[in-house]
Length: 254
Length: 379
Image 1 (spheres, each protein chain N blue to C red):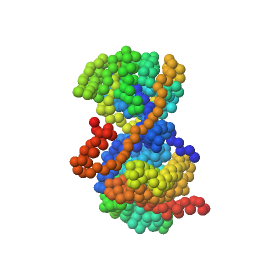
Image 2 (image 1 turned 90 degrees about the horizontal axis):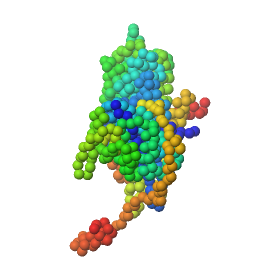
Image 3 (image 1 turned 30 degrees about the vertical axis):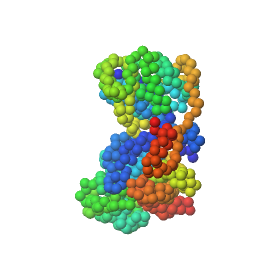
Image 4 (image 1 turned 180 degrees about the vertical axis):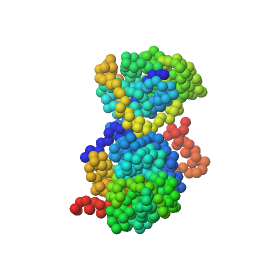
């Protein structure tokens, strides 16, 4: 009966992002959600628990504003949550997040398996999972789209560019999952209502240990824009040559 | 008044929205065209605990407040107003009276399966000659030993074709006028109950509307709902409750009209720019967004009063009146913004316009709402 930790990030909901007429992207009116692939990790944890028993703890490192995400995460199956929060955590880079997670997990949360999404919906750096495994000194399996658990052995199918690799790993281990692994459940009404009753362990400012000065700075955020032009070419050989030349000049073809 | 939603309410709204996008949006055109009741959607809603949601857990509900329920009706209706109505009509009119007026035995027998979504409820009040004038009802129930024998015809009964449990209103004392009407629980397996044809409608076409014929329909005395002669009062109170559901349905239609209009106005290029840059379109959208906000506030206000145990008859009527008329006005504007494309079958705004009309009619016409409101403010 494995004790599973599943990590999630409370990220900007990309559906709410609207570019301004100036091309700038303002994030002051956007909503937040559990990062897309982390929902797959939460679902994978819930399914493993349904099949094998054990426990699931959801953990996130964020600013106190991410408190809203805890109920959302808890409505998706975990038994409890751990909320590592500090107002200073608003621009963490992946190495810092991994170090914070590792510190809290090492000190407070016994585990057999850690599940992470392959990458976050915002940065998609794909670093927190592998770095966390490195910090904890445990094996890490990435790009996983299928998990089978047999006792303390985990079989994972890795979806790679040129095929599927099946690896066997002894627990404790860390796995990062792809969206193909499952379809995350939509929590039912009772799941949401019961989420409020589940315990949340809060690791507040200063309790996580270490200094985490902001190293990431967003200098600018601009939307890509599509330029529309209406140019007419005659439908003859010369016109076609003109069209090809125009496309080449604009860089649309090589 | 502050309607900031709780974290739970926000999550429930996000979840039902995701559910509708995944399971309802893809079939909405088909169930409208074929007048098909999407039972598969309701099976999932039942599994997720949404059917019977505002009733206590001991009766199979989820024990949420009425505001949360109204929000869910709104979100389902935003996707498909017919499905939103079936959900609201079953939960409000089809289930509510048994919760409010049923004996403990009736609650265990009928309310529990209704709340769990295992059985469907229907509210059989309207008759061919008794619409807004409910007291003109001619269906009669005559006592015979341990039973009541009901004879009459009910029409425009929602969920009529597949409901398991009907709440039927019939006159038990012809001399007593409005105080001579009583309510009965009649199950579909009763040999005296026949379901007539399914009416073809302009809008909310996936909702199943039928005529119900009661011929020497015998029900045990134990299946009278509430006190003898109290039927009309119960019906009116149930309609107050139901009106919040219809107001929420209209708010869902309004939201969908705005969603579609915003999308189209930013995509449709005429005169080398999106039509949304034209002031003519901007003004329509501004009015739509303003009426949507007002309709939503009135609806949430009425639901909040009900949650607080305060009188809400007038507020429910105001919410239903304003939201339904705004839905009709702006569904038409949404078609206008879409131009010729909006008039074509398969476009959501075309369906919204057909669906909006009924919200001005059922569970009390706009005129009936104005009677209720005037009666409350002029006394």
